[in-house]
Amino acid sequence: MISSIILQIQVADSVGHVQQAVVAKQASLSLLDLLIKGGVIMIPIGIVSLLAVYIFLERYFAIRKASKEDNSFMNKIREYIINLKIDQAKALCESANTPESRMIERGIGRIGKSIGEVERTLESSGKFEITKLEKNLRILGIVAGIAPMLGFIGTIMGVIKIFYNISLADNISIGLIAGGLYEKMITSASGLIIGILAYSGYHYLNILLDKVIFKMENIGLEFVDLLQKEA
Image (cartoon, rainbow, N blue to C red):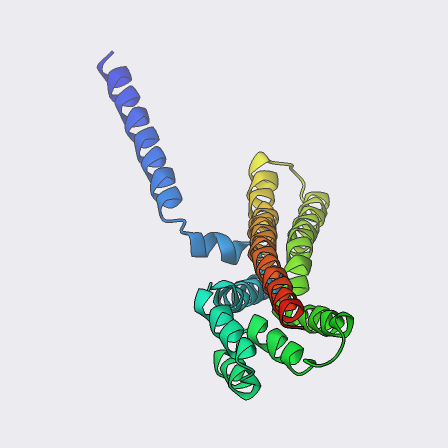
């Protein structure tokens, strides 16, 4: 009876040690360890993620700078045009060095021409400035599509390797399957996360860009109205 109790205690103690070892192993599995277990496919996923971060930050600051409101700019332009100070108006546009100021500067260069020609100049100049602000935004959209695909490729490669190992093994164990599968699912998770972030960043930047377009259209209309009143 006593020996039976001692045996049960030893078994319980052994189980406790095993559980503690498992918990310790799980606790020691860091994010870096998970990423490393993702395999070689994590390298291109990491590259496109860094590319997405760089493009987002670079375009974000450029578009935010272009979206800043300067109510005094058009007031000064109006004053210079009314007083026929064309050179001062051009100098103000050059010093401002913003998308709308460069657009207005080209419009000022067409003063004396027909209103239709001025409008066409403003439209083409505005499109050119917006195109510059859109630079590399498409790459961010491409990353949003490519990153999940790279993740799925990594998972498929891992599953193929798992089944190959199963074909070589005499015994099929849950550990053999689950151990390899969870590692390869890391690539899918990483690709999806990066894709979602890139997709969100792409559309957020486009929302900011729409505000810039709206502002430039209003400034262009205000400039044309000014010329029509002075004609």
